[in-house]
Length: 409
Image (cartoon, rainbow, N blue to C red):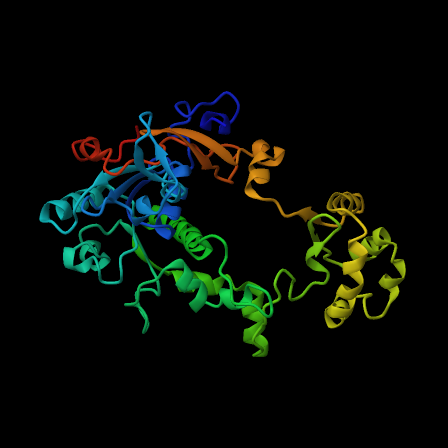
């Protein structure tokens, strides 16, 4: 769909300029790849003005080279807009600066003087040699919120090590919980450690903005991929801390709820999430196995956890008597959560995705691009899509020559 249709009825992207919740907030983005860019894209979607700094010697953000697929222009020429890059870089304008040069450093300092927020994901200490680390900028720009994202954080024995999403998923434990019990540890299908780190960064920045509004004082936010990943071990992490028992991989099954997972029907797989005993009774009614709801082995969730294997031995053949659609319809009629496993073609063809504006189209310098929508819906300060993902350095002259380099255009 066209991006303008993602706005409240009657509004256009032009009408809503400046109406975002973060109107007037200025972000200097020195980050690349996924965690930092996810954060700055979220800030941009919420109305902040984001200037993205890219290295002209390397062709810009690393993810510009992470393709195919790429956007091709009207002449069929490949642009530097890879799908990976576009996923995290809308609502930004790009300038090409060599921060290793005195001229580039001077331009960064000029931009930092105007910015509310600086986001960077260099190795700890990596910006100190350019005089652009937090310690160097703090005295001159005490109002600056300086968010540093790294693999392991600014402190600790691993602080000097590089960090990538896969390494964070491995080191932080989530891979040990993902995959079939007898198979290999498996990473998530997308860079979820990076994305979650970017979300934590956004939350931290918003809290720091509130503090700044009250005091005028900036601060540094030190955020690590691994710390963020450890934080979202959630119930499994807390269970280990309280019992000392290392959890085991269970594939698609839940460690604390049964039945909850992926089940085979006569024609496809179905997801069942039977969250309480009353839902279990209704599920058994659908299967024609009402007596199992009274069986002491299965009458309560703790009992079902203990006799998980015995219950699955009964459920598996019983579910194969039905099609996936029959199971989903039967569960929905009984208010028991159930659903399909959809491939992406079905996801983006669904009425739900269309109704929620989760697929948008924007016009980039290389042509129209299809992007994922932002899931936030505000009644007064809607998300806006003002700038398509930029080509490297496309706004360098415009921004560096402007009296106000963060003026929203």
